[in-house]
Amino acid sequence: MAPSSGREFFSAFLQDFQRLKNTELVEPDARSDRYDDPVWEPFRRRCTNVASELFDSYHCEPRNAEFIEQLPKEQRDELYRSSCEHYRGTTKFKHYRVDINNNPGDGNEDVFYHERSRGPLNRPGAQQYYASGAYSVIDFERCELKGRAEAHDPFEDSQPPRRLQNYSGVIKYRGKHYIFDLFELLGFGLGYDPKKPEFYMTLNGYAKFEQGAAPRLGPLCTYGTATTKRK
Figure 1 (cartoon, rainbow, N blue to C red):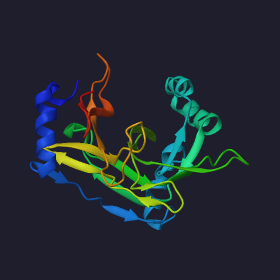
Figure 2 (cartoon, helix red, strand yellow):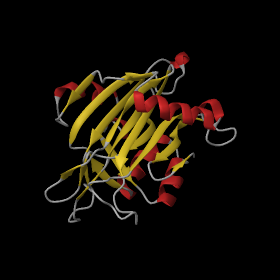
Figure 3 (tube, helix red, strand yellow):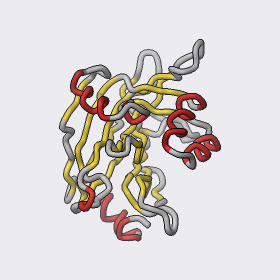
């Protein structure tokens, strides 16, 4: 269940966010434009499996992803690499040390961000494409990916790339941490006009999305300038 469990929270958040009221933008404690920058090496040394790939992602068919998630960690890592498409971030790498799950009892979490993923890298001869970046929550005690939130890149994959009014970040709102993703809607049958763009925003946070399940990172609510709805 989302925080405050109601439209009141989402309505208040949207009004506050537009004015940055009760909202703090969290700054990363490390950043670089290089994937192989030495600043990331201490993190990579802590784990030798998928979790050591700080700025990588594996794009799977939904059925495959659901099956893989049910397996033990060691089997998951192997199947991600063999049956899913491997993408790697290429720029704007960041690290946040923040209580993203809003549970002071287990301390802060490690959150990594990247933009402009490229792949698939594990399909020899396949044409490569760019995909959006993401925020990844990595548990270095268990060497596991504990959460992920998509972030739309601030440019369109075109030649030459066109700059978009896309923004994302880690925020602290009324004492709790969230990840927002604000981006231009392209296409989708809306009669896109670059001079009058429509926008969409997703607010990601930790909540119980299924009854009895443990809290996980996911979309708490979504907003659009054409239509506004709640998930």
